[in-house]
Length: 224
Image 1 (cartoon, helix red, strand yellow):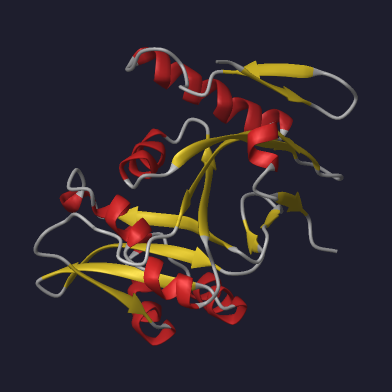
Image 2: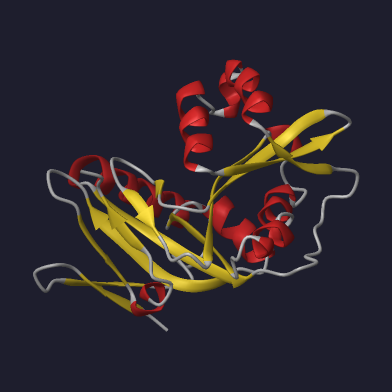
């Protein structure tokens, strides 16, 4: 079933919740188009996924140790450029109250995933706001040597009990519509498709979402 997204001013475009049909060249072409639209028109389109938190969520990835990371744990790792971490962003995330889960194998960091409990920066200058019963799952990374083992999907779920204890009931992921690895990880982690969201950046942010995504209460904004 196709979904229509209405842009401010009345224009509409249609998206397929399953993404472009087929793989390989078709997906690559779609990613190229979306990349150019983001660079030249400021348009970004996102897939939204949601799920109910579970008190005893099962996680895959045998032989791995999952644990919360502190600011003190993460700051030294910023020296490794391949991890895509910066000291200023790490400090800002902990200042907002965000949490980070790390996956380790024999003491080696295999990957990490961030979780926000309050409005958090998204892309460009936009931030994403969500209701107080939601935990927002964002910025996951798995080292290339550890990919293909379901580690990202496991990190999405491993802290469910902690967030339930903080009054959250649902988790939401909002990723660009051509980010196939994150979409696959969300599906493996029992997230259900919850529509689309999009915005056009620039001097004035214009954002909208499909009906299914709007039910999660998501809102893009630019801080004043």
